[in-house]
Image (cartoon, rainbow over all chains, first blue to last red; front, side):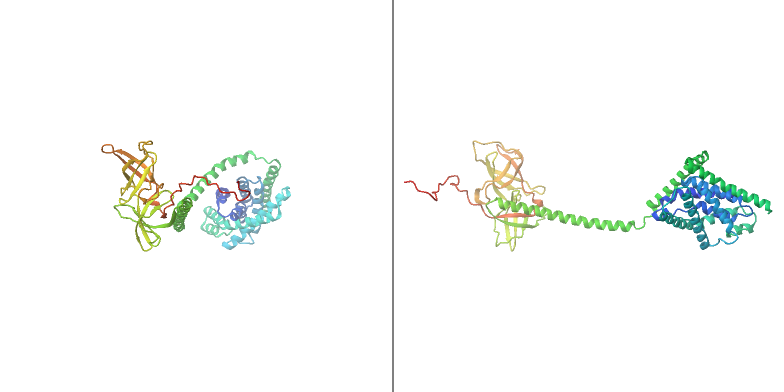
Length: 179
Length: 300
């Protein structure tokens, strides 16, 4: 239920972003499209408690929705989101994503990693990109993802707080502490 | 968590990762959307439309009603600029009109044999009872004297009235003090044109009509041209005065005739003063003079 709620909220965020991002006044900002699916996947991976499979399922579903709404080949962002979820779960014992600066940095890293994966998959599937364009897009997506990262993390922490069974769990969820 | 559970969990995660990989491979191969993809898109598209509608509505309201910061300053700047452009345009129009009037006067001076003196109109009488009946010109008594005719390329303006210093007044033909000997060539009639001094028009009236050409006598019609006759030596003959604007039957066999001057006095900018009338026509001009041959032998 918790994972489904995260996916649903991610779906709404994707819908809103896909509608408003093209109306932004500055062209450079329009190019810096945030990778919401990767962010949500990373969050699910970071906050996965005992089992990783539900988090990966949620991440794959979010990525799949991002593929359909963004016009990417179905499965592309789903696969990357699954991988990012595993990455997030892998680092959740080592780093603590708390505070604006840390969240910004982690979001930028997630965006850059997801973009790098997209470039690699394109190259492997014989759809190569020009290197300069790929690097520019990678940087822009990292910046865009970092820009909305704190908001997305805050939103999903609220969802986790709503599903908390105790006050301690609720405070921990709002603080971004995995138990 | 036992090792078995952990293994199942990670196996499930691996399978879940394998699933999108297979979907991706399939979609890259075929490039077509599956039934599930189409179903999701069918649900998502109306939602996207709704979000876009709301966002555009809010954005439009913001830009049209809320984000009007600076519009007042911009409006003031544009209004000032508009005023300046209007002033410039009026000035340019006036200069163009002056240039055109001067050009016409130069043309008139070239065409006529009379000795003409150009003068600029610098003011007009603005009495409320007689409208504009006199015009002041910036040429003084050293060059201009009383009763000299004043013309433009359109026709007769009037005659010089008072001369003082470097200025002089022009009594317009529409002034009640103005009396011009005229003729109506179409009707073969001549008479005296008197100004009416009306406050709503520059009309004049004709009096003392007499028949000058019995053979060509025609009734006077509206639109007939009125020119100076040259009688009395006040005005040279042949200057256009105006056109007949109204013909009414008066007492007995008299007709009351009104004349609309040819010159638009309200927009007068420059005039010509006839300092000396043109020389009278040479009666022997049409006779041929045979000159003696310059070379060769003279017959015996």
